[in-house]
Length: 448
Image (cartoon, rainbow, N blue to C red):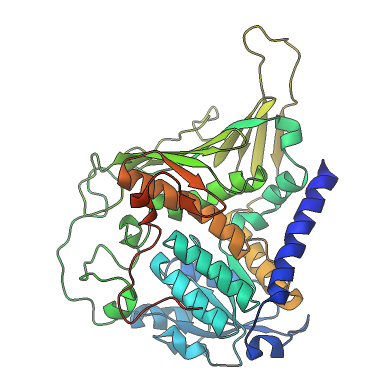
């Protein structure tokens, strides 16, 4: 089984690399070869909150040099610049970095609606790209990003950083399915009790003097409100959603460990039931994805209740970020700890034990999100030198990001939808297909 899986991974990587080699690239992308000991010069775009965390991760990697920072808020830009690299260039508009031959890579941690345009333009300029999750704001954008990476032979790493985590690498390489059996159900969720006021209510006002609101909006169009930027955009459907923001991590892990490409149907239910704020996403939502192999993924989005949705220990703490329920046992997985709880035979079945109890911890304590991000950043830098596909390659990021997008569309149309993962279209709703993208505000447009 393991040799077959290894052969499959080798085939997929060889195929994708062959596509990259066969495609047309800019002259610039073929000129520069970065040696093993050469510093990779990196510009960071979007440097608040998660952007600062990612800068910290890259700073822990050897042979990396910060070339510049870009942010549409001058206060954020200057604060981050002074903290991390006072000597590095600071610009409001990241396009200032695209024509610079002394910049090798762009790291994008802007709001989700900017990811596609900035990634594609960076690829066209011959830059390798690390782009935070979720990869895109629409399914059309995601496929365009994959096409750009292949056309211009760029390394594009998506911030689904758990793919670089030692525990998840162990589970994948050892093929956890051999120990827990056929998996028919997976479960994860995002829980945070934001009742009663959530992100609050606000009226349109003039933006702060430090913020270029027009540039923050880019392809979108909306008056400024203080409960949109800098971080609360994640509760506005035009810019993000919590199933995409947090859910994509665990949907990606489950899809990866089960070697699935994508679901064949989705049904989402929920709404804004109780939280009194300006959000345009639900405060309560359950999404269910069905796969042709015979497996259901369930994602719970609870923002009026914060208690764990999965099995807990004696202290009430959840046993994992996600669970995979197999015929032999159930896997509960964290970043630094997993448990396999053996199945107890049910009615009319032999009482023979079906699996062995496992309670496994990483030897190095404290390995969590930020350290995994360090490893993900290092993998990206290594692949800039080797030109191999990174752990969170853009194709994988796209396939996983499709899942929250189709769940949001199912909720919007109020319908169970059937999905073709090959054509990336719905087969039973043209209304749903009309939501695969939106019309960009001029002059912004996606072009390869």
